[in-house]
Length: 203
Image 1 (spheres, rainbow, N blue to C red):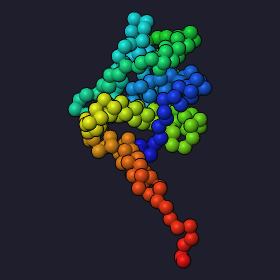
Image 2: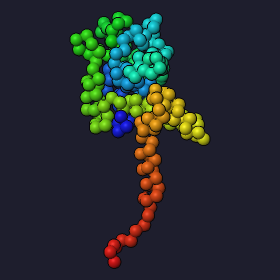
Image 3: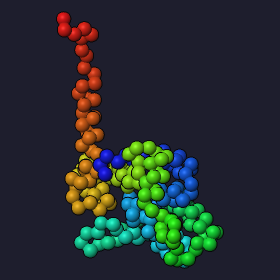
Image 4: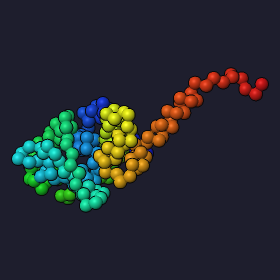
């Protein structure tokens, strides 16, 4: 997934306003939690709602569990939470309010398929944007935040990001973030961009 693109948060906010509410709600979970689409789509209303209110901390069943820890616990803050509440209320108004109802319904009683989501996001965002762009955006924003908090210790920022993503190895996180590529491009520009050459060659 190293080649998957990400979006900046202002662009995400703009795009969410243009999306059907269902897909905006998927983004509202995917971006601030970093959960994989296969961890989001099986959610049922009981996973999000407790005592008629959205849970402060939501538990997601990990797709790739290690050391017996098969649960990822995350919050859904701010505007993302408000979008999700709107979607849940919309579904309740249509009669889908039982605890076992899928949050994102598909066909024949199953949840929405990841292929449907992939095709939708790619159709509106273009190549390089399937469903993993949400997790990629989460990774970059979390890393950027931790790096700002620990400017003198970038390895700590990477380690905290690794833990947030659930990666087993820090080199996986480095590759995932595309740090090596961005560092190379920055070095290329710093070294070679301003070199002056003769206008005429071969003389």
